Length: 577
Image: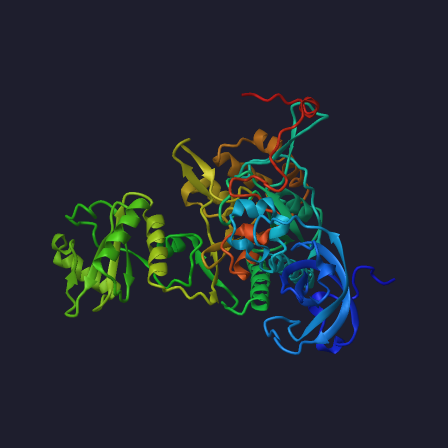
């Protein structure tokens, strides 16, 4: 049966259709009335087509962005061929037009320039924002990427399984979104931060390789690369090691980024970097390897120094080959670093005669200067930046490295540089509570197993955890899971959780692991971040169809909102001031 609204899509009409009568449907993109002749452009998902009419009365009352259906004869353009339009060689001579949905005469923003509008307004009228082809096409692109992900995973013999959205609250690091129970007074469900427990239970259930495009919910403050709800490619493998997971992750990322981008992608296998090395060399556990600068440990050189700026402190440096900047640039850089928490920023220039020029060299011994030159292979034109401090030196050096890379334009924008960061610390010391907390994922297997937990200092225990990183973005996080109940009890005990807590908070895993749990491992690439990088967007909200604003409010739906008193009573909730 023929569609009553159209028999041809706007963007698919070609010069081969000349002379034919077509029916199209879409939105009025533009109206141009020349008095005796009127031009319309009609837009649908496939593109634009120009419509002309000398019968002006047929177009009276039309407004831009109204939904219409029309018929007309396709003809070749005699002049004014538009090479920037797919349909630029033809136009439609209007016969009949019917308004299907009239649009208000005043729009909150120009559709084709919606990205220039205030974000609050864009999100409030997101359905109009999504009509902009630049915005709309990113959602279509997202669909294509997800289709390819499914194709890759099924080609690797993974089974797609959907896990529940309504589940139990568990201490996984972030805040849960909780759902009060109507039938069980004082009890709550929760939305999953990730399908972590379910996917491990699937391994115990005998499934070999599982995946899903999983929605995840975390009650955290929104930012450029994080929103309240996001999607991840969640996958898990039984009888697997970290190398098995690496191979799958490398395949997924390499195939996606080579297929959907023209940029150069780092070859497989991706570079492996232990956490400690990453923090020392790059000042970050998600380093941007497009930046050629590396941080160098200098503490040993200054262990006996008399210079108070370095005395008794951790000292690290970054060598830059050559800088052609004014003194005011160095001053601004120093002020920037102090704002970021640095005690100060020293810099040393190497002159043509290989002497060192700096305000601090007069405080350094000849031996210290000699050792600096040798360790860093300092040459004429080089500039050495030095950070010293009692704490957070690695992080501050990482900020300096990033700033220098950006300011000096050292970062290649046409490359996707991947790496795998592994050997994360199992525990981190919580100074406020004076206790050890899990540093990453509480369900990870410690390297060395039970023996490491019993004999090593918690701060020295390394977890079998890993992150995939691209251009300074964490793209995926995963681990070899702790499938042994005795190791799990000890691991949680060191973080302050007794066995009773494990039973209550992780009842399903605690019970299941007593019935023959296989070794298993997995990870979860972030789909939103993948799309963000592939589309060169800097904000995650640009690649989500109906995102909240930066404050976590859904301006389109008006949430969060208040409930009626009847609903609150049903849920056994009383609002406190």
